[in-house]
Image 1 (cartoon, rainbow, N blue to C red):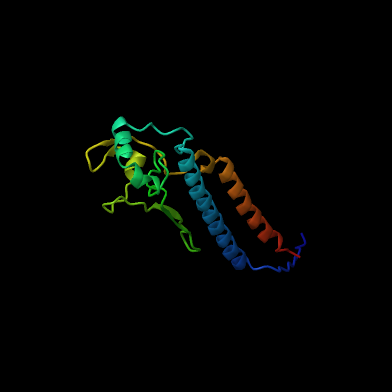
Image 2: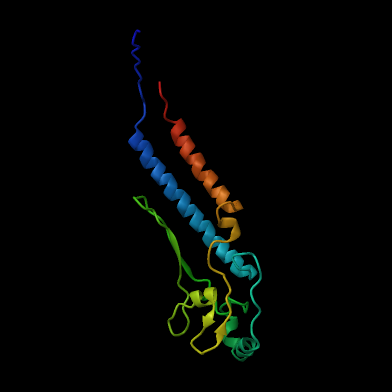
Length: 174
């Protein structure tokens, strides 16, 4: 049987394509985290938890405390359940960088008067420094639309896949 000799000429560099793919993945992670941060902000404004349900109402003692301090708090946050002083909204977005393990994160940075970050207490529930019970209000995390299969998650994944496909299409085998 005769052997066929096939010559193939390539006009692309797979290493270059791999580097571009890494950049697209990082871009997708950063876009996803930016949208997650915006989604958290929207849910805080609408007073909904990450599942889309309303927060547990304030206890009568908290309401009385807020009435007593009404002048102090009104200028900062506006008086809603988790936005009374405006500190709960404070977050820091740390974007991913290209590398072996690209990681992006959102950190809660809002502190109370004593300098403690108290967003986690409100997210998980428990006892505060005054000994009062704080009900769980899951305000921080990925909302339904940002979780895999959600509307915004699909949108970001589509953008990332489109960028990767375009990078492949620019490379041709002749």
